[in-house]
Amino acid sequence: MTILVIGTGLTTRLPSIDWGPVLGKYLGSLLWGAMVYCLVGFMRPRWRMSLVALVAAYIAVSVELSQLWHTPCLDALRQTRLGVLLIGRYFAWADILAYLAGIGAAAGADRLFGYSHKLPRT
Image (cartoon, rainbow, N blue to C red; front, side):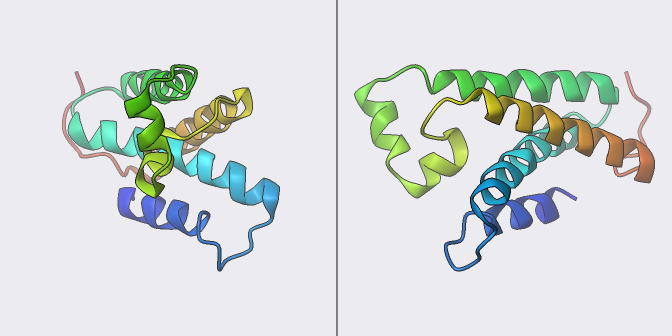
């Protein structure tokens, strides 16, 4: 699921695909939140889904809030394509809402389709 989320998310940033200004922006942010959930779940397969979602939300909100902090090193990273994809460039409350919606959607898919590993949760 993680690879599908990452691949779809990257297509929202391709200039050759016109998602439109709103869908392209917020679908990418929603999928970024879902990716964080998937990566946390992959790294900690024994965690309860609620803990995976909570940690993913903490990471996503922290990354967005980090955009309020400016240093020459961080600003230089934000000028690269990889930097924009990983940590973004500008702070926006709407991005936080999109991340949380993506985390919720990924957790819902995890529960509905059982994507998480079949290990006992702690």
